[in-house]
Image (cartoon, rainbow, N blue to C red; front, top):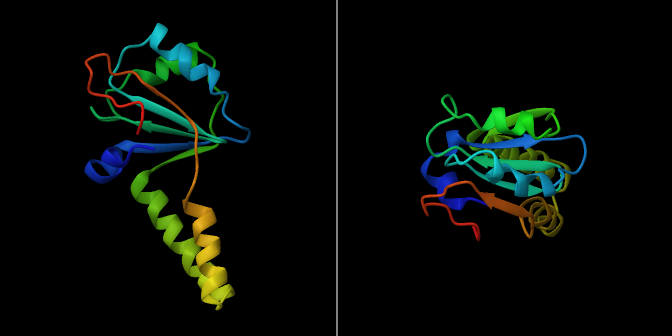
Length: 130
């Protein structure tokens, strides 16, 4: 959902994986108690977080804890997600030598997702439509 961050700083774009669908209504509540530069976007069980000022000094975790965000099973940066995707694509190609099947599986794995976004950047630097 944040192609600019994926390209410019993939190490600061995290995907938080949850057991259940992420309650998107929580995203609307974050700006009421926190005004940091981070952008959040929920798609199903995943929460994407762009940390433009870096992860280490972010205070977003305090706000999410206060709002009762569900605990994630794990979180990975975009570099790692892309490595997992490549590994999975290799496995699909090996198990489905038919190029049509492989391309259809890849399309399902990478395209057409929609979700809910919020930008916490109150300085106009965020783009909610990304």
